[in-house]
Structure formats: C-alpha cells, structure tokens
Length: 68
Image (cartoon, rainbow, N blue to C red; front, side, top):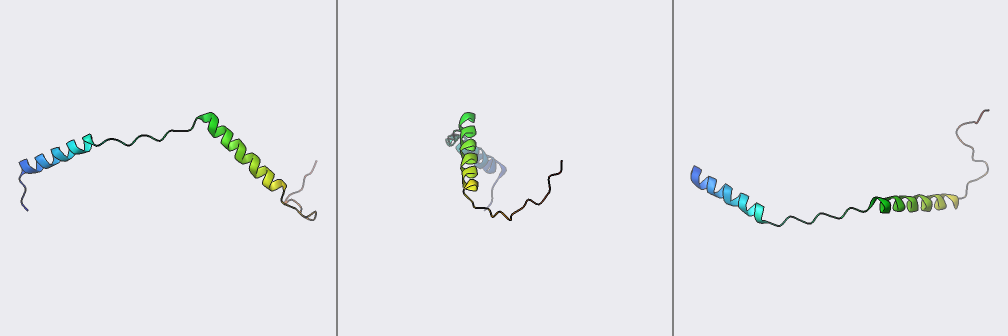
C-alpha cells in the first residue's frame, strides 16, 4: 500500500480528531481523608483484637532482655 504525505497527514489528523471526540472516563471519586483515617483505625482495632485472642504460651520469651 502506497501512501503519499498528504494522505498520511489526512489519516493522522482524522485519527487525532477521533481521539479528541471520545469521552474521557469519569475520574474515580477519592475517599475523604476522614474516611481513610476511620478505615485505618478500624483495621488497626480489628488486628489488635485478633492478636489479643491468640493464645501465647507462658514459656514464650521476647528475643531481648530489658535492663534497667
């Protein structure tokens, strides 16, 4: 297929015009900062509650020693 510079320019201009006419997708709404903070706090509390219900044997010691 042979294209002249004029035909190539016409194709490019029409392709650019078609791209400009297509509607842009609507931006996704970002959650409010207060909502993010509440979600993070709720997740932290749920994780703390899950850890509190996990049984730990008395023989378990930390990997370090506290010295005063």
